[in-house]
Length: 193
Ligand code: AP5
Image (tube, rainbow, N blue to C red):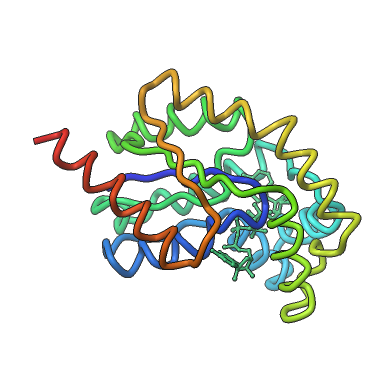
């Protein structure tokens, strides 16, 4: 399967992508993780991205597309992929379509995980205590949620127009959400038969 996971910060994209990676045996590609790794490695991109991420803003499209292009050039995506954190705006969605068309591996299913704002704020506050991610403080989280509403929410319509969008309730236990996602993927599979 070739899947894009959409949803606000804290909606559970990373958590669900990690489960899908195990159950479907396909790579999980998180642009947030790629950027955090680049920052730890102090690459040129990592150094530039660090302060932008700490402020809760999106890094420039060209910068992230370069990283993504490199990652999608690896052979393991031939069996499928789960994209988490990309695309974050319409320009990225269009660039992704072009890139995946070139590779003949277009997105099959875009799944939006939908969670109340109060719940995502609470989840991220908990994670801040446990992990200390430097963009998880209350002020930056509010800003990340605004960026999501302004820039990323239109991407949902982009996939709806392509008839690739499913929406799933992201509250409840991790297992509950995971079961809902698997049900969508199974339904999609049997539609394709
Ligand atoms: P990124 O790393 O993508 O962060 P995000 O989208 O803000 O997402 P989060 O990691 O906060 O949440 P998630 O939805 O993955 O939820 P998770 O599973 O972790 O991006 C970070 C930054 O990098 C951006 O702000 C930007 O600067 C930059 N960036 C990344 N991609 C970019 C791009 N394409 N373009 C430009 N800039 C980009 O869960 C959250 C917490 O909740 C966890 O603690 C988890 O354990 C918990 N949880 C999960 N599910 C449940 C559940 N069902 N019940 C209770 N708790 C749960």
